[in-house]
Amino acid sequence: MTPNTLYCRWPFPYLFLCHSNSTNEASLNPYPLTKFLTWVQITIQTLFGSSSHLLFSTYYQFPKHISICSLSLGIFGSSLSQSPAMGETDSFFSNKSAKIFVAGHRGLVGSAIVRKLQSLGFTNLLLRTHADLDLTRQSDVESFFADEKPHYVVLAAAKVGGIHANNTYPADFIAINLQIQTNVIDSSYRHGVNKILFLGSSCIYPKFAPQPIPENALLSGPLEPTNEWYAVAKIAGIKMCQAYRIQHGFDAISAMPTNLYGPNDNFHPENSHVLPALMRRFHKAKVEGAKEVVVWGTGSPLREFLHVDDLADAVVFLLGNYSGLEHVNVGSGKEVTIKELAELVKEVVGFEGELVWDTSKPDGTPRKLMDSSKLASLGWKAKISLKDGLIDTYKWYLENVKQ
Ligand SMILES: NC(=O)c1ccc[n+]([C@@H]2O[C@H](COP(=O)([O-])OP(=O)(O)OC[C@H]3O[C@@H](n4cnc5c(N)ncnc54)[C@H](OP(=O)(O)O)[C@@H]3O)[C@@H](O)[C@H]2O)c1
Image (tube, rainbow, N blue to C red; front, top):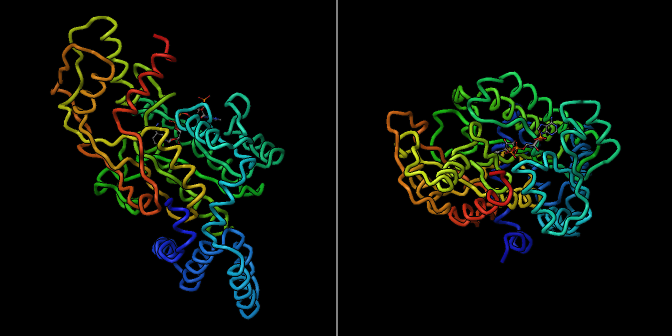
């Protein structure tokens, strides 16, 4: 039985879960009355779908007795119709012609989301390259939303890069990301988008966050200084989604993926992440008949990896099944040491030489694992094993990256 059917037939366990989320959400609000209203609103939204936003606009703006009447009528009316969890899910998954804007559709994440939506039969994807629509340009973004009026938005466009790029271009990392997010989230709200999903990353968490890192570790300590510009922008994106939900009842959610890999990854010799960098180096060594590949550090740090097709699956799952204030971690829940990863990449690539560890070089953070139990409790888990994902990625690399 899928989680969706479970929610429909027995809404109460789901309601209980949503209550625990809504308690967190409500607790963010400093005023007791609004805190209570937020809690009730989230519960009602969970039960009766996003149309109940309208009901609560009434609740906040009109005298109490009118509001209570309309609230009661709303609850009664909705309860005669259908299960809200099902309505929420149905409204996304059943309308395959809904117009969905995937911002950043040529990137690692955006391209996987497009593949996933297409495989599910969504036929009305709205796609614009960076050259067609520069999302940092406010008036262009506003005109685009006014003309196209998308129903759903997935924000996978961002200025992304490693430590070197962050250190060299801090102004670009903070300004471009803030501009893209602000323009897209605000225009989505103003032009009647049903729901937006904003993508951040695990770098939003403090350098010394508890491991595995739970969602509530956000803003609990200082950030890792090497990517703080990017992280601050991403944190602002999460907060903007929360603010628009609280003030306007806008269905804006955020997902924070762990380290991703897969087709369309960046295999650049200097700017790539550890997994594509290892793949490229082993491949080059195999082709050139090298005897060894030297890798920095001891290989002992623990890391988590998620195939980007799994992330895309989670994004679509969240669009259909989650409407909460708090962001959601998306990880595989499986850790490997860098040494295990390197051995596996070596095997998949078929490099038969030696793997040598240069222990005079720094190791980096000893452990970085996301706590994805919230997403698991909603009913989603990763399906692609690291080995299968590496085989798939290497195939893509051979077919698509200029050797
Ligand atoms: N890669 C990971 O391991 C990872 C992990 C966790 C989270 N994420 C998150 O996932 C999101 C996407 O990352 P990604 O890895 O897919 O990045 P990516 O491969 O670099 O793709 C980013 C996309 O955004 C587009 N873009 C950038 N600036 C733009 C602008 N001003 N206007 C319009 N489009 C613009 C890029 O187009 P151009 O290339 O043409 O500029 C590109 O298509 C980011 O928010 C990132 O934080 C990624």
